[in-house]
Length: 130
Image (cartoon, rainbow, N blue to C red; front, side):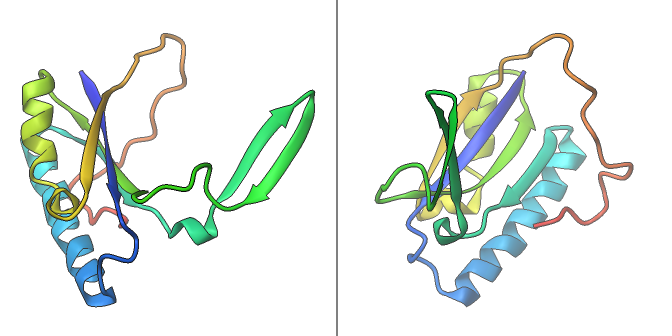
């Protein structure tokens, strides 16, 4: 089963050096997960100050600068993994660096038939883009 691991934390909690170290550790984890057969995708997100939100109301598109919700913790990135069950997904989520200073939310992915094939990296050992 596929799981989305959503990484939440306070955007201001890490210094630039700490953030870069977190990216490096996450890259190493992505390689480990690829070797273990769990890795599908991962990426950090730019800060919420770069967010744009889109809503359709009464047939009209409303575009606003900023995130969807004001919260104490912001969505900072994700891992998409393959795991046998929730217990295995929890064990993987606990290895994500962001779990030490924020929260990792685990959500099972609904498999919809008829979707296009996923674009997969030709070489999972290649450096993931983080």
